[in-house]
Length: 317
Image: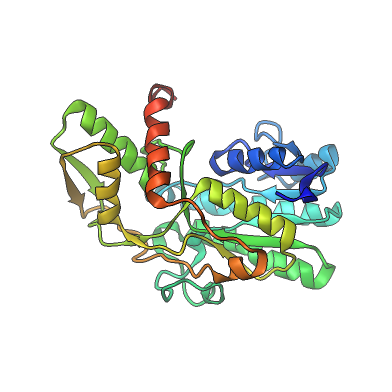
C-alpha cells in the first residue's frame, strides 16, 4: 500500500464487525491511526453521538461501515428498524462530518439498493430505474439515501464524500447465526452440522434458481481503501467480482467444501429474494484501479475452515 495512510487518523464505524475488521487490519498495516467507535459509547442512530465522536477523535478521514443488516429473514422481520436506523446513521454522520469539516467521508451502500429487475449486469446508472426487491427494500433505500446526500452535499457545500455499492460479501469472521446470516455462512453452518450429525438432507430457502455475485471480504477492504485514497467524486461505484452463480450451484460447491454428501431439499415456501445479481465492475477498475483477486474456491475454503475452527465459540454466542 502507498504512503497515503501513514500517520492519518481514521475513524471506522463498524470497525469491529465482519468487513470492518479487515479494513482496520489493512489501515494499521499501512501506518494509519485507527479509531473504532463502539455502539455502547456512540450510538450513531443518534446524531448527537456522531457529533461527539468527531469532536473526541478529530479524524482526517471517516469510513462508514456501520449498519443494521441481515439476510432475507432478518430483513422481513425488521423492515422498520432497518429503514430508520440505517437512514438516521447515514443522515446524521454526513451532516456532522460536514459541520466538522472532515476532509473525506467514505460510506458503504448495498447491492440491495438496486431495482428488483435491474438489467444484468447492474450498472451504477440503473440504481434509480425501479423499486428494490421487496424483502430488503427498506434497508436498500435507507442506504441509497447516502448517495443522494453525498451528491447534494458536494454540490451545495463542496463536501468530499464517496459512496460504494458492494455485492454480497463472504469470508472468515462472517456472521454464522442462522437467524440473521447471509446465504454463504448459513449454508456453511447447515452443511457442517448435517455432516457431523449424519443427516441425509438439508433444507434450503427458495427454489435454488436465483443468482448471486460474491466478493471476498479482504478484497472488499482493499477496494474501500483504494477508493478512499484515489477517488474523489460522488458518482456511485460498484464493488464486486463480476461473476454470477446460481444458488443451487452455490449449494453444491459449499456442500463439497464442507464435505457433506447428503441431498438438498428446497423449501419453496420461503422467498427467493432478487432473481439475479451481477455487477458491472468496470467503473471501480477505471476510476481507482480495483479488481477482485481471490478465487471463489479459495475464499470458500477459508470460510469453511474458519467456521470449523471457531465453531464452538460461534455456537455459544
